Length: 635
Image 1 (cartoon, rainbow, N blue to C red):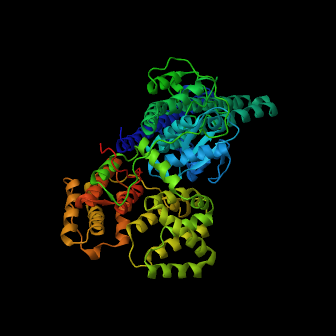
Image 2: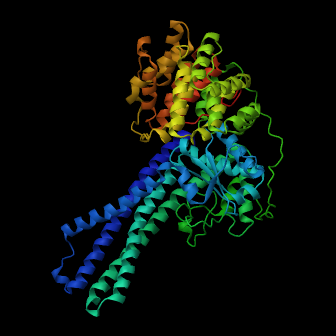
Image 3: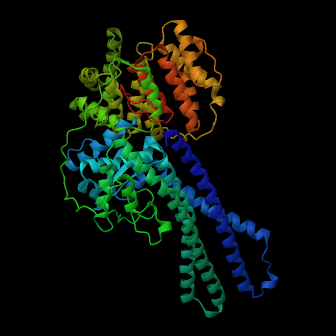
């Protein structure tokens, strides 16, 4: 299943979740209504005087129940609004410093960095669950830009480097295929129904207290109140049970998909297969002890708790998962791995040849097909890119000031006049910032164009933790340096959009994008704007621009677009167009990227800068595109 299909299926699963949730709420309302009717009959003593069908009473109960359930759901969703960090901290997670020198922490951070770069996304924050000695991990967050990875200390200590890589590939699959977002919504849904049971427990306790402090003449009322409380607790429990069934049904099949994706990503079934065997080698080998374990049980790599009823299990049986990735497994589990704090020393796979200046057009088409489907070659290339970046730059992006300076260093112009103007601006702004940028500009240039986006991906985790004034300063500096030569180059636009994509949700408090358009025909104007801009960016002559636009238009099929005049092509209009295109359903986004790739490749040559531009557009569309690799498969 490709990225676009998986994203669309996740969206439809969300619709199914809403339908099942609605059915559960309706059942809760009817149950509460019947319960209240029985309580009234008991207190009045005559059923004949109280008809079962009372529309007005039903309306009051429905309104009250909806208010409680919806309030509980919305409160939980609001609590989770900050993203995956809320889940990680609730489970006792400690955010790892990206610059940590601790060998065990470095082992985890390096693995996550490689996976993120290979996937075409910024590096997520990593949390260590220090108090958990069993093997487990999770990915949490509403969107890619706020995702976090959590690992137990046992996972880091008891797995080899290859096994840890398999687990991380599994979690990145959940991020890329939309499972993570669905899982977060499940948390809110279950909490809303759970509130009914919590109210029942509260009412029952109060009825028992009344019984010990009041006279016997109030006995009937106390019994009725106790019965109502107990009934509400039972209804809430049954509703929660129904929610658990939904949770388990949604989760199990996604675990199989994530396992298969991990094998495709690493091309090493022994990695994830070995990790699963390590879990089986110890009783309750993936158990989570934290008190919030039940609430987040569907997020984990392995079962965080043991389910007595198989229908409630959020994970498939361990032996079935192992046999799917290791068909020849003999059913025996290895001895538990000794705790290791040193990362395994292993020669990395030989990476493909690095991109130079020109790429084959077919590579672009292959990149669109591999969105959300990184391969072992991408992983190897990510390792090579990280090794190519000077240590001073990797160290610098671990601090806010250093990350700020490295980002600006990627924008320093090679034209002398523009460079002088940029330095004058930085010197006026902050002399020490200018000095850092000067020191970093040379190494950034020597690392090559392909390393620039990798540096940005490494800087994002640090920049997420800026304060608001630091964010405003970075935004202003990037905008000024980009406009110094009065021309916004493709990389400058891409950089600006990537920073907005990953940082704006944290500082601007804008609402999340939602799917609004299900057919690319509904965004003809926006596609005309995007393809025109791409055609004019990559071609010098009018005839070449028209040919490039025609190639992109042909890739759209029946959707008719029109090439716009130069005066209609502004950066603000391009930004608006791309933002609108980001609300398309996932399968339609593939059509957009196919048309972009056809436009860029129309002249038979694709520069690395054009490749960066396509990756930037894909990023804004929330379709993480792996790095472009010469000779990669195009299927």
